[in-house]
Length: 353
Image 1 (cartoon, rainbow, N blue to C red):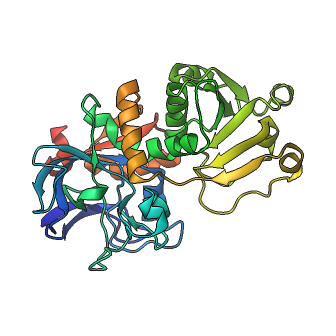
Image 2 (cartoon, rainbow, N blue to C red):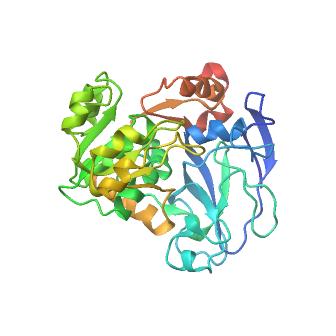
């Protein structure tokens, strides 16, 4: 299938229009037209090879919503016209213990990433959702529930599941005390989802500047980490902290906020962590943990939950040819809170907006 999109051709160049070939349909494949694609901070990191494993040319995008155009002969779950979504992975071994229990993100052989990965059969490079068309195996296509705004659904496939999964893992229920560090693309979804679960939500920020935003998103309060007295008074007040900060930082100031057996979960940063103090860990039997995305079943559960609770990210829609400017703005945290590409603009001239 011949298609087109925008690709990083190397680590230094802006993304540019790129024509390429999608694989033909296998019996268990679903082909779909991409309608919307969210922009994740990891797209920027991957395009610029910040993590050291990027391969080029690379079409980013792993927050994808589209309309089915064709299905393989063995497909039973979808038909032409259905709305589907694809997140951060498009395949796994499907046979290891983790895959068998629905934890494909933790596949023992490594899951196949939506882009900058390798197809498990042909070993060709996988390419993501900054493109007109996608082909994915049926089991990794998710059903978009009726009622979800398609133009705002895409970020749920990464920001949504990345924050939903640790809340399910650490058993957030009504009355749970949840802290959220950082109020960006991931953080604002963590607040909305935790509030939707009935938790008591505290946003942790360096200053009080974002207090109004935090409360409007569903938080019960904002705690300024620069206020030593307020931080001391809040000791032992949280059961779970979701840390969404995407850069190296010190987690030590947040640890005393956890109650006994509380957990701080890192979901935003990939790479070295500033050296934490073990004192609050040992004295309070507290934990620092990490969490990736969820499995396919949990991601579908998250979509259904968000549809039932009317939880959607706050998005700014952009044209495909504005992607490089969006990357620049994202580096400056100049977005509230997620960019989404309207893929219908891929073939429109710049003056057609």
